[in-house]
Length: 225
Length: 369
Image 1 (tube, rainbow over the protein chains, first blue to last red):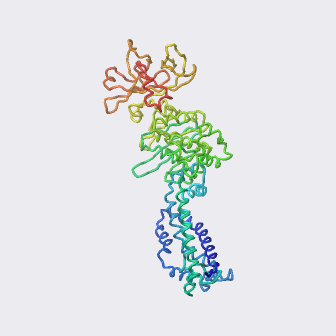
Image 2: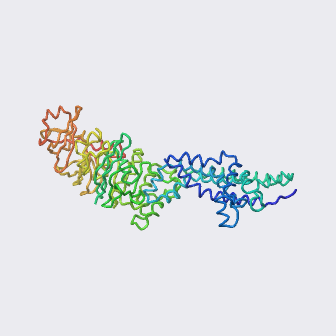
Image 3: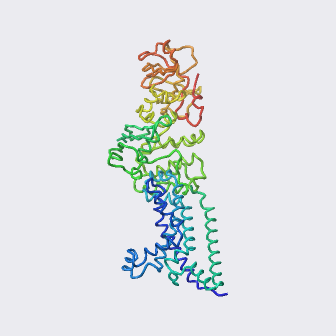
């Protein structure tokens, strides 16, 4: 049996891990704001963050491609500063997947934050804990399941991404050739054996990750909420 | 030295409008029926009600006025919530340390000291979900103390507990109130808890202060009787043990004379607080004779308050103390009770304020007829 090149696998994991990390940093304040705001802009913000759920990846990818191309303001600025293009680069992919997977981070976190009541936060406030302190020591631990769900779903969703990557990143080995693209290419060139190995590997990996998450989720929240 | 409050808060039909100075010493009871705004006032003091307008100042330091709002975590209040609000993701030890670690160098008590005082040792390794309601409340009190508060706000800490649990936690509360160097505002709708714990009393009704002052004085104010409820209304007075008699009675001195109670296990000279329910005081114009009651005090009528029903509340001066008696309007007329009239108060029951809570019928046992 022909062993496929494992480069795309490694690239995919790097992409998913980096995207997830960025999403947790970016998505947490957005989710917190959405969970607590009484602003009239809330539905607008909610609709915007949910857009990647309903848009075909090709539409999202198309607009991202235009935004990142060297002829646009953002893409041009990037080229000037770094000397490389955003499109067809790993960084470009990370940006695209962050936007693409945003709802998968924000929505579980928002739900989790909404379920943390004011009661323990008030209790922390009168124990001299400031707002950030309260967030990290009370709200976040109580919303731990939400963080776990957000991280896993975002990670998994990024691994499975295809359309946006194809539009923005193309198929450059070591830079933008992620596993789904590699599988597609193997199938296109009728190398089913390699496609089989990658697909099965991804399937098994995904199952194991989800299994772990659900197992942990069952045990861990005993003292939460 | 006072916490001055001059605040207003509107919640639909409910209006809180309170101007009051709270003394920064001992325990101030904040009493009122449910819905009178007690908890809301406590939350305003703590800075948990952003919508409140007006002024709150702690010992001259402004916590809130038109232009300033000091956030709750910078006020240095300790808060014991009715529902304890222990952090479910931390063990008991973690809950205590949460407070302690944020109050380093502020002169608060040491963890060991609080653990010993509240008997928390066996609970330290447990999760909040694994301990009883009374134990949770003890942890919550310990946690609040460890935050080194300048004032301790307690919102009906016993309300959610059954009588047995109350009895279990009250001795701790009492010791705390006696020894704490921290002033306490204690919200409750239990007269018994006030009689036992509070030196000062503020009575709230429908969001306004109805009466404020020394606990003994306010409790013996006929005006407050309707709020205390027929069973609970009554005076509180200080007594000193003067003798232990061979027939099993203990003699106590009050300002108007002496009282005899079933044996109280305490030393001669000890100070106690007594509670005399208004409905257990009978009035006579002449000194009664041929009566089995042992406790009769000479009194002077100071106030007669008649309401809409057939009853009346009489305030009496007994030495330096004030007593309350509930009689019928018919008796008021028959005995010609009006301010200045001398009478004798027959006390059907006298209770130690101490034994009043936790054992629901204890104050009946104190009666000698």
